[in-house]
Every structure is written in C-alpha cells, then in structure tokens.
Image (cartoon, rainbow, N blue to C red):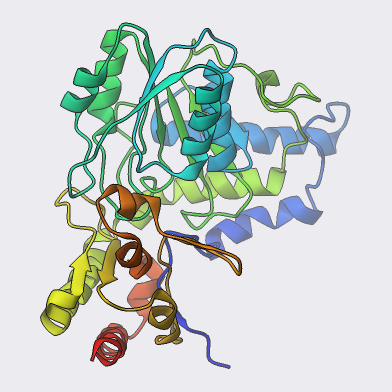
Length: 376
C-alpha cells in the first residue's frame, strides 16, 4: 500500500535521525534514574538532564534553571496559567479566541474561579495588535496570554513587543510558542515571563516539552509526588525524551535555513489554487505577517467529508475536531467570521524540510485536479 504524501507538519513531525541517534543510548545503556544520586547510572542520567537544560537555555539566552521539562505544550500551558493564577485573588486576563484549546480551557476554568477574561477580537487576517491590549487593560489586569504563531492560519503575534509592554506595566505575559519554535528565530527575541513549547513540532520526540519561567515568577506546583523540576513538576524525568528535545532545539538554526524554499513551495500551491478554483476558494491564511509553512483555505459549497475523501493520496488536516458522534468547525475560522460549513470545508496544508524531497509538481497537480473535479 502506498502511503500518502505528508502535508501535516504543523500537527507533528517525524523524529530526525540526529535526534534519534542522541536518544538511543539513554533507553538501554545509560538508563539510570536522574533521582538516583548514589551511583554512576543516576549520575549519568542527571548529567544528561543538566546538559539538555543548558542546551535549551543557551538557545534562548536564559538561565538553565528557568527551563522546566514537561510532557508537552499542553501541560506547559496548564502549569503556566494555573500555576501562576489559580491560587491568586481573581483579577483580569487578556487573551484571544484564536488560542489553542490548551490555553482556552484553562482560561475557562479560571473564569469559573472568578477571573474576568477579555478575548480580543482579531482582524480579518487573524491579527492581534498591541494597541488592542493597551485598550483592554484594566487596573487589575494580571496576565496577557497570546500564542506566538497560530497553529491553524500561521499568523504571527508580535510577542516580543507585547512582552516588553507587559514588563513595563507590571503585567505577567505568557505565550504558547509551539508553532513559532523552528519557524521563527527566537534566539534573540525578548521573551515573555512564561513560554511553552513541545518537542514533536521540531523533529523531536512526542511526550516531551518545556516551560520557560522567568526568574522571580511566583509559579505554584499543579502536580505533586516528588521534588523534581524544582518541586514544580513531580515525576521521574524521561531522560531519552529530554535528550531528544535538547538535540531538536540545538538543530533549530539548521531548520530555519529551509524556510525560504518552503515559502516558495507554499506560495506556488496557493497561486495554483487561486488560478484554478476562482471564487470557490477562500484563503484563510491571508496575513502578510505569517510563517512560511502554513496554507489554510476553504472550498465553498462542498461537503467536508467529500472534501477529505477526494484526495486519499495526500495527508493533511482541517483544524476541526471530528469523531464518529459529532463534528465541530474550527474555532479559529469561526472567530474569523466563517460560517460552519465554510469552516468545516477547510484544509490546512503545512510543509517542512522533508517535503522538499517530494514531487511538488505532482502534489500541486493532484491537489488542483481533485478540487476542480469536486466543485464541477
């Protein structure tokens, strides 16, 4: 059976050979528990964690102690938001309806605890600007939480400027940087107080991520049972995954070198779709301020299930949560004013370095002809 060509790199990436090679010894040879400080096996594991923390902190130019290892960005977001605010007297939070559910759902929980949340309205391109935040600020605003790059439409928020303003105003700032890492150069950026990310978006392993916590941020543990990670995240550290995450972060400068080529491929797909599909096509990723690898579009007047069945040789997503019992249109596209049918009949194509080895002309021809046949 021929496998489809993968166009869903915003969902996950394969583990790179370099990352896998770095991880393998820690599954069987250096298999110790980093908490076992009485013998060599534990010392080896502890040294590996220390080195990984140094590697990641070096990329961000921060102190190694500010990097906390988690199971991924979802846990990092929950720890950032609830660990910072749940035990504080409720006040005001500023965010956006375009955030990932790993931010929206903790915010909804905080709302039940008495916090007031302002969800800023994006413009038609999905952009949120600093002036909106300044206007929404209240005397008791305690946190601004905005993703650095949107996972569905690729729009970039100017988090460095937002974080600088929050710093001046004495307001905490958090960002989910999962889709920004490896697509933007964050090594010299002004970082917010809290920054979440995952390994599996940058050719690292699944099940590992990290939370950057600026020194002095009063974070409280949300998980107990051990003193790991400065007492903020209990549990035996997964040494192979941590080593893999560090190697993936170390390779980010290499990943960034492929972005111009990826941009050309994405733009070629978009141009071909516009030329062939005309008014049936709605491009959802329209901001000029967006990462190179995400193309999101909707096809008007078609059933979303037929849309996905008509191209079995391509693997992509539509950003909606679908299962056998119910279908939900993308909350991101709904926030941009798309109706349910248009939001459901959407395709997110996301590219990465491995795609550059695929037959791009074949992909373009197959995509265009399949959609032309569907709307004819």
